[in-house]
Length: 537
Image (cartoon, rainbow, N blue to C red; front, side, top):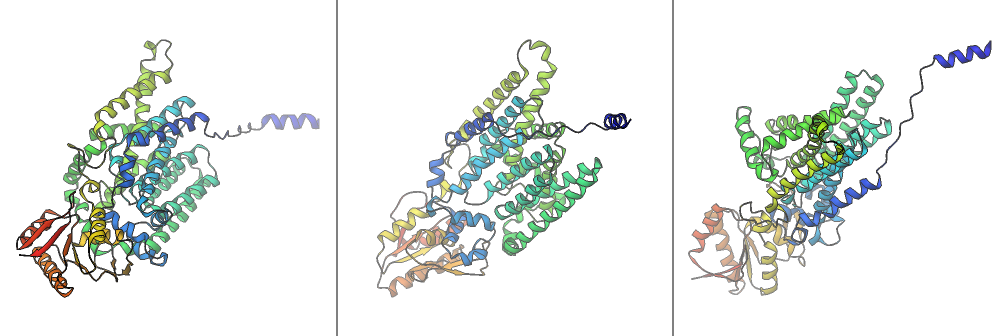
């Protein structure tokens, strides 16, 4: 009788859930990622990227590496402090762009993961989706111009990486994976301010999904994890980044903060201007990205889909609130890369739908083969259409001319330092100063902070009493600077006067033409930013 009761109780129980099989990357996954990464030097002009001189916005970042570590909280300025620390790990300060290159490579790898992690019908189809998402990020023209010595490539890698971790967490829920997500937010905030934007979408998506599914235990876990992540993100921002939010910085980005009544026209103009670096018409890429969101939601990754969907809404709100620049090619680079990755997923989703609709005419052709063929053809067309962008060196007719091709304060500084005499005088415009200080490697520098510019700090070169930096870039400022240079040259025994200028605007160039018309000017070097000698007529 006892045996019968035990048997009946066992038979009445609900069946135990099957153990979750934790899938690890296969050799095929690693092989596909290896192929994508091997294509980076084929698609990009890595040599020019790593060897070109630093331009204005890079020069002050590079110069900060030469400062004592104790000055880092000040010299990091608007750059995340973790990014500045990573730059200090590079042995040669001329090779600092290896850091943005590394994050560019990482963005391709995490794009593969984002495409691979949804619950595709077959493993092979998941690999195809990962490959297409990674290829879309690799081939995106915007990646060709974001080699700056700033955190923009990290913004993209962190955003796509956070989405991939979210999809990974949804695949097999556990507190450990939720903890990894929280840790990713903390680490991400150190290298990318955009982490706060994507983290808000990620935890909102997870909270909403579990709320609708009435999974109260998970809902509590998400709430706690979200609170911890938010607290950590805020702590990092307040401790290291808040001081860079100055009136000068807000004024610099004023044009990227539209008023509510300007929003429609502003978005239309900015999206039109971004068409070239997106590589295809905005409606087409946007449509594929939306298809990617729908595909991910359909493949049981709804929180990830919500997180992606929240990005455009969040950045518009932040732009109107004058918190974060809206659709600037640099600060919104993460949006372009995320859109490309989602468009890749959407392409596979649409191809899967089409192949399913016409499966009766495919006969014995495996669906995955047909889907792959469609994706290869369309990616090939995208590549051909944007062929002029690949291996872009900063100056391609019909595309654009980037600061890397327009400036060269390194050559000017090195030439003057090698050819000047001890009594010579050097005149610089303000935007050449950071680069001049960086490339004058034998001269000591001293930090001056606070300082009323967008960076918030300046440097002095105590050993270079021969240098004059013009006070302003208008005609009056240029005239005062040149006159001071003439006076200093007379005090030093009638020495030569060298002039170095960098990142000269059209208005400043006109001021220089007006002032220098009253002096004898001799150009002594060639290139995009030549050195000239000034003397009285």
